[in-house]
Amino acid sequence: MNSISTQPFSVNGRDYAPAQRPIVVICLDGSADEYFDAALARDRMPNLKAMSVRGYRGFARGAMPSFTNVNNSSIVTGVPPSVHGIGGNFFFDTASGEEVMMNSSKFLRAETIFPVAARAGRRVAVVTAKEKLRDIFASGLFAESASAGSHGPTGGIAFSSERANLARVETHGIGDVEPLVGKPTPAIYSGDASLYVLWAGVALLERHRADFLYLSTTDFMQHKYAPETPEALDFYAAIDVELGRLQKLGAVVGVTADHGMNAKQKADGTPNVIYLESVLTEKFGPGFRVILPITDPYVVHHGALGSFAVVHLPPGQAADPVHQWLMQFEGVSEVYDRATAARKLELPEDRMGELVVMAGRHAVLGRTPEYHDLKAIEGGLRSHGGRYEEMVPLVFSEPLNPVYAAKASGDPRNFDVFDFTINGTH
Image 1: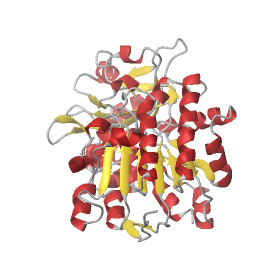
Image 2: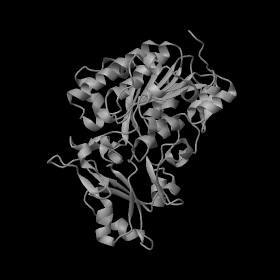
Image 3: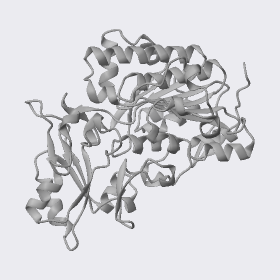
């Protein structure tokens, strides 16, 4: 077996002292704990059950808003959005006057753990289902590691299952993904898009091409299927097989999620949407701009409808009357001015509007009826973004040492997962 580095390293104020074992951290996108409960109750996840008994299973609090880019960026940097700068999938750049998608590493204000681990001698691999995250995850990995002369021409591996067939050594650190995994590139709107991430992780470990892995899936299945459905149960059973394979290869495995998932519909099954731009215009007049940070290229998942929105006010419009009126609006659970949102929700203040609005468990926030294509979610709307999707699973394959067991009993965050997996299990 190839030697595994135990050289300590530090990233964003956190110190890491890895054991001489492979490290695998998994983010199961959209994986509310109810999915684990449903599968465990039906004996569909024996490896997760064993991890829960031998290791640790509990909860962690995610970053807000409970969206993919926000939380994955927090997990890979170990810091909240106020530090790393990614406060949503989407924001309004007041300087340019444009609505911008934050799926590029140029928006990151903090270094990720990966180039630092590579410089410390770790063979790093990052596999994501969604191509939109790859640039963020690969930030600094190739150029930084290449200059340090660590592992070959790139110093790491970073690719997506969505575009596995397009991976190249020069740009991704790997060029033979499909032969490696033994399967063709999957459709992004499928369970296989997530399973492919785990299959790739196993293959990289088996061939000693990586010993420090981050595997991040997509939430298509959770958006589409409730925890008790046969499709969801089969999906989680397949995940469990890969959890077992990773552990048999000697890896210390840490599992969390970026956010949970809830049904967001009325009793008749139709989406329960508050069209903020429409109701604000009707009440106060034109000029409001509502930004939905859930917006990304994958609208079939959610129709760009989530439980978190940012409101930019018209010139001359005082914030307080709008704030007070929204707080009385049925379905709205929290409203904050910009400074309060930045403080309470740990958000980058300069990338927020004048107001931040969150909806309750079963409601989502939209712009106008014309803006959203509800045909994309005809099977029923399941989504996330608010407070009710903030709590996520936290599972480790090994028992926690006394220091980290105490931390786990407090207020652990999902972006503590690398710290716990590396420092808390030995």
